Image (cartoon, rainbow, N blue to C red; front, side):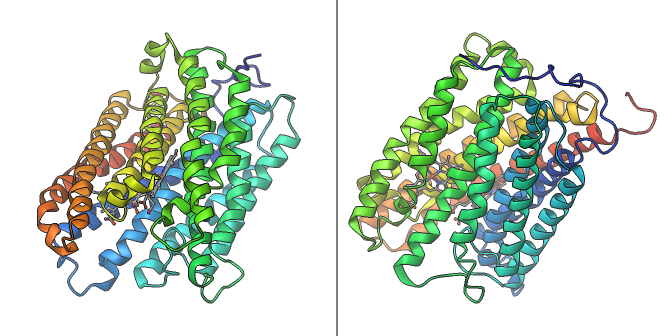
Length: 467
Ligand code: HEM
Ligand code: HEM
């Protein structure tokens, strides 16, 4: 039986002006996301400029590429995308359960702890304190803070579920709870939290554990949080029931079963046991099951209702994110094949894939989720639809452009390396692509500024302005 979201059937009407303090957690995470997107994009832009002009930072070590790159990556993941998706979740979980959030006070504390961790990440990485492992760079005290923050979020949401009035748990709730608890565990494992001095094991087992965690950041954090938002926003915007409850369950369980096995596809060129590589490659191809179960469900729900999607700015971002998910997943399954990876590994092709995934898919859905809940948590219409549309096009052109230039640059590098060319001699050939990438990055950075302005004007209208 298809399950509709329960918007509007709650104890409270959906569009009332919320009393002070209500949705404070959702608001906090929304603002966190919009603010850190600006900082994250500026770090990306600085990194891109340094790839064009490597002498730019001069003797300022804290601005060097090796420090700015992890700042960019940690901030896009934990500053922009995750809080954006959580901001939407802190609105829709209580709404779908027809109850209040267990504790807004605890939620506010979590937002504070989260932002404290982000500041600590920037300062420590810029100062050169790092565990030196990709996606697990932050040092031990920050790891503890991050795991604690995920724990608090899970506690708050789980008790909201316990207090619920709605007996049926809509699929978005499954996704958000699973994402938060699984990430608390895999983050602690991947950061080897029981070894505060190094945050690492040694040798090959460390690489395997790191990439078990590394790909889980995308597969067990960003993907389920994004799916949760899409399952909420799309049926609501289309005013239609979800196409299939069964497909949503198939998508959920197959994601959990399959995604956990594929991290070793990052290590195909490394002497890890062959059986592990075989599992990683096979399951990377099998990812088509959860991906298509989710996409068919969303797209069939929206079938014949693209007008409604176009009219709703939140749904427009989210729907575009689902299209990007299709492309990034097909590309990902291809990149897992050893024959393909011989050309694409270690070069800009992978950076292109990363931007389609984290910005095009999860980032787009995060922004869509924010726009979907913003009028509800502020009790006011969005400040400017025009600015939101402008932001949409800047990001769409930016991320599509990134994909094209980085894919071409990656193919040039990969083919040259296969033919025995040295790394540095190919750099001249891809210089022009780096310049175009930085130009496109400027568009994404501008989009971040526009998004922050639009959100701030919606949440904090000028005195005497429209209600
Ligand atoms: C079917 C789904 C997917 C598969 C099979 C897949 C596969 C892969 C593979 C094989 C690599 C490593 C490439 C290499 O190092 O040569 C990779 C890298 C990456 N993927 Fe995916 N991917 C998928 C979906 C996604 C999604 C949805 C996201 C984002 C939410 C994502 C984000 C990334 C990122 C950021 C990297 C770069 C990691 C690094 O720094 O080396 N992927 N992916
Ligand atoms: C705000 C949205 C953005 C997201 C979600 C995002 C995401 C990512 C991710 C996941 C990576 C890791 C790639 C890998 O290891 O394979 C990365 C690297 C990078 N990004 Fe972004 N990015 C964003 C914006 C930007 C912008 C605006 C620029 C400016 C051009 C930029 C430039 C870079 C650069 C230079 C790298 C390092 C690439 C390398 O090591 O060669 N990013 N980004």
